[in-house]
Length: 159
Image (cartoon, rainbow, N blue to C red; front, side, top):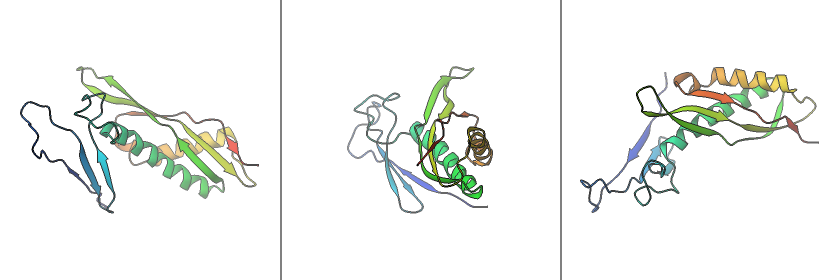
């Protein structure tokens, strides 16, 4: 079994705290050394207490699901002999209220646009099957209650 680590760090500094008007900006540091400026979503905590330029947890959740799906898709496509030149996903997460009125990311739509090249270009049914396999293999999709929907754009190929 492998472990994956992230350090999340926030510091109050000299700002007030008990009035609940403190900055939500913080830093994520990952085991490989990458750092990401993070914050609460400005849709949840208004600016200036949120930093809209920073990544928020909801965006990171959507990006992580998209990234996991993409990485599996690329691996499976390569194994099937399909050459992928580019993969771009403009994924969208949808907040909703659950049965107790709590907000949650109930649905994430993956909307990949993929460009293939080479002698063998998959037809739409094959692309759909590749997405299905990628979804079944994605560790994150297998770990969440969120509905993950793949809505691929039509197949594109380079001449």
